[in-house]
Every structure is written in structure tokens, then in C-alpha cells.
Length: 186
Image 1 (cartoon, rainbow, N blue to C red):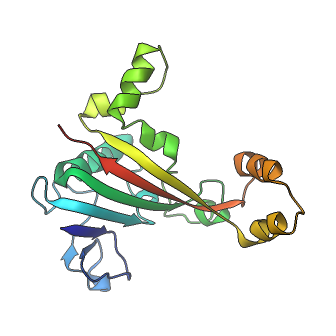
Image 2 (image 1 turned 120 degrees about the vertical axis):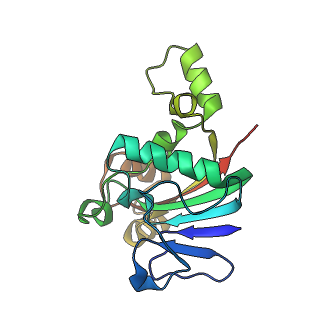
């Protein structure tokens, strides 16, 4: 089963489309902050969360429960595709319904292997995979850069090194982050 959670008006063929609001005419109406989700354990092979995670789980307890529920309904090796606005972009900052920035480092807190490495080396990072009994591995991170910045790079107005510095330190350079997250069970 493939799930499009928080689908809004993006109803996809071949997916079970779920949204909190009946307005969107999704297959299932359900609030992702209410548990359990209306799916069996180990039933999803793919989950799409396109501009969803930044809107839910403002309270850490709720956010952790969301991730535990995603883990519960996912098959081993299920792919979770996450698309979110970059937290230093006006698209994230200006929307009052955005309650949580989503970053690769934040999602890495739910990787058991990384947690064990941090613990072994005395790192202060919260081992949330170990605490909550989940295990997700980041497979790929893609940053979508603003068109104007891409043009500056293509014309040589800025170098690759300057672009990398801008990505780390300036607002409105990275528009969106796309993350492929793999479920690891057993």
C-alpha cells in the first residue's frame, strides 16, 4: 500500500490519500495528530509527506507519537518521502500553520545506528530512535535552490564555494528540502 498523508488537494492515483479535512475529497479523513492511524501494522510500502510534517507535532510528545505511528504502519524497508520548506526560507517563516522546522539532522535523531554511535562517543544528541523504539535511515537529501541563486551560479556571479556558504548561513537560498527516509525493522 502507498500512502499520501496530508494530501490536501494533491490526490494521487495509486495511493491511499488521507487528509484531516473532508473538503479535499480524500479517500480517508483522519487527523495525523490522532492515534492510532487507520492502517494495520506493517502495511505501507511507501509514504508521501509533501509539505505536511512542518504543520504537525508542535508538541514534542505529539511529534514523537507521529513518528512512532509512521514506523508502526510501515513495512520493513518502506520508503518515506518528505518534502518540506527550508526553515530559513520565507515560505517556512511566513506561514503561521508551520509549527516545526524539519531538517536532516533532526530526522537523524531517529536513526538507531547513529544514536548508538553518538552514545558510544559521548555526544549530547538525543537518542530518540533508542528511546522510542523506531529506526529510520536517511538515504538521500536534496536541496532545491531558489531560481535567482541558481542563475547567479550558472553565470559565474557566485562560485560553488560561495553557494555552499550561502546555503549554510543565509535566508532564502534553499527553498525546499526533499528527504528520502527508509524504515529499518528487525
